[in-house]
Image (cartoon, one colour):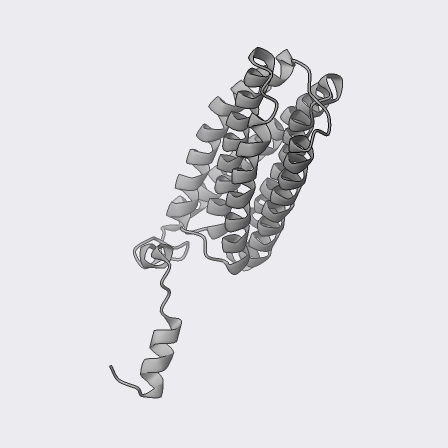
Length: 230
C-alpha cells in the first residue's frame, strides 16, 4: 500500500459505512430532472403534513387515555408523538425553502436531537415502571390508537423513505426512520396494554421499550453525523 499523502487522504476519506457505498449509486437532487425533483419535494411536503396531522391527533388521544388509566406507557407514547411532530416539522421547514439542500444539515441536527430526547424519555419511564412506579389500568382507547398506528405509520414511513431516497434527501429518509420507530413503539405499547389487561404482566412493556431506546440512540447518532442512507 502506498504511504504518500494523497493515498492517506483517500484512505481517511473512505467511508466504511455500507450506506456510503449506496450513496455513490443513489440519485441526487441535482441529477434528477427538474419536474421530477419538484414533484418529489411536493410529495414529501404532503407526507410530512399527513404525519404531523396524525401525530397531533395521536398525541392528544394517547395522553388523555394515559392520564385516565394512569398509564405511563400511554403518556410516553403520546409524548413520542409530540417528538415525531418536531421531527416532521423540521423536514417541512427544510422543504418550504427555495433551496432545501442548504437546510438539510440543520434539519438532520433537529431530527437527531428528537431521537435522543425520545430515547431518554423511554429509558427513564421504562426504569420507573420496572421499579414499580405504579400500575396501569385497562385502556380500550389506548389499544385502539396503538392498533391504528401499527397500520398507518408503516405506510407513511415507506412512502416518505422512497421519495427521500429518489430525491437524495438524507433528512427525509431520517424522518421516515423516526416514523418507523414510532411503529415499533406502537407494537410495544399494544403488546404491553394487551398483556397487562389479560395477564397483568406490567413488566413486558418497559423491557421491550428499553431495546427501542437503544435503537433510537443509534439512529440519533447517525442523523447527527449526517450518515443517513439515501
